[in-house]
Length: 156
Image (tube, rainbow, N blue to C red; front, side):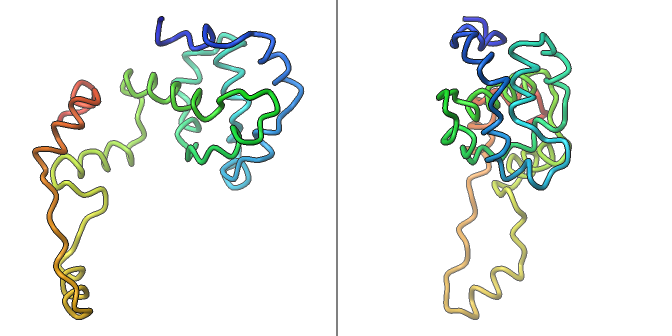
């Protein structure tokens, strides 16, 4: 199956019903706080309206937190968060990743952390009688990132 044609997995009629529903967007916590984020619109633009390139370049795509609220409430049982993840993967393969995500992946590749651990963290842990945090194996994490295909997109 062509990765770019997720529509092949669904009955087109499901998406025509989707046009009239919008339960996913009404259930989406991100849509409540990020102006212009609309999961239904992103999927319909990609799946029905032929706007694949525009959707893959749309930074709003990356606002989805994959909380699955849309999917849990969809009366048509469309795997909305799965489709959005699929579309995000396609965008990533083209190098369309937001700067903050690129930076986080770069930090993970160099340190093993997604959030920087500071010396203060160790001092606070020691003061609480806790052991210092075990440092991640950066080589192993870089290998995982490369196997996930990120080595082709980012310099890892």
